[in-house]
Image (cartoon, rainbow over all chains, first blue to last red; front, side, top):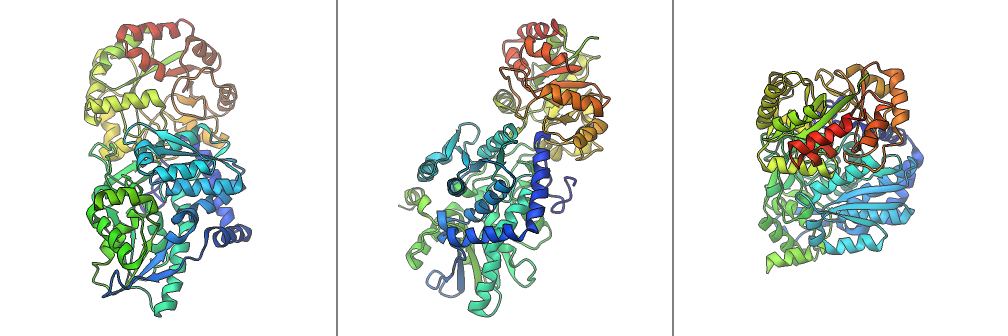
Length: 374
Length: 231
């Protein structure tokens, strides 16, 4: 496979040679497991009995009284976000690859917690890289990871956020590739990771499609999700990509709009749309939401943007905070700040029947959000 | 036969002086790092040097100027830019190769562009202890001049001991590749240099050279001479 063939001109494997054989192994094992009924059965059992799938669809009548707006409730999953869908799938994959050590990056801490959780469940060694700035913003998640036996490695250089944490996780993987599986948290990174993460997250969209058909007897007019790296978005979008009449909208943080204001670039092993200067140096992202505070995005989103299938728009910190507060007050649901960006744009759309990916719950964000709301 | 000694420097205003000192000390080839903000293959020493270089404004255009000025000082020494794909993507892949050549570059190394990707971009390829025989053969067929043997599974930077993976990697690669084999990553002392050149045709010294260069051209020349004395 060459660098330019995966998602149009995006994707590829822009990594040091040391990792190529591991990516080849991952590709062939993944392809084998796709055809393996026992893999799907094991994963479905875990998703049902451990993670809490299927998640419900909740109509938000008071939040959007003039619409029929439904929330796909990934916030109700074990660990509080969609990240566990991917973590469970990859831990089953890692075990079948014979790897006994797991390394991961985390921004908001939700992927780190999901990874620590599945490692505890299966008794695997777990090392999570996290920027010092994010450790400060998301201290309860640091404590959760440690409680479950993970080692949290602070990253104290550069932006001290997800970008550097991801680089350090990849460097760890390079040094320990024989024993270690890199459990990447979003649909980013070198091939085949973007595809693996998408396939593990598309359960969100597949379920939601059936659920909204059952509830409304028709497809939604619009599907909206937040996009950082873009894993919950690609997961929910995949249920509707072939339905040409369904408008699909991805919402980025305005200060981290890799798709809205970025350019073609190479970051963390893939060619995608990134925030970078004219020399290809990666720029800093800025968002109140640690989960969206990333200058890159999954390569498939760049492709979906270019072919015009998905629209990508931005929401500001203030708009996300307002939606965060409003959903709490009108529905008794405290969303994470990340999907609050999607809620902010969704309620303004002209469409009436709308599906929104509520990717996680907001407990982790209370301190940060209340600081800005009061 | 004398073994090859490749010294890595991070591009900066003093690169021509430092490169001259390295050649005085016995370096045959100089790699010039074009800094990238997120260098996945590099350990802390080169990463920090890249951060400093970027803070000093060393962008692609400035790095090419440094390359050209170094070429003026050292007309006969191979000079090889080493960088990451993001810079080429932004500058234009072909334009980058053309402008490197026009500025006196002898080849280039792109640390995150493995063999098989963009084969038309002539560059020194890397192989690692994890590489399969098939990939070693591919890298050998595509490489430009010599082949870079990454001695360890890991990032750049000094290590206490020379990697135990090197003998096996050299033996496998000799069977598959005719090009000269230069070992790098983790080579920082005369003892490493001697041991590595008993197996390989040359060595690449990066992080340790950068640390020596922090004390100026004379310190770098003395460090390089201490390696040259034993290989």
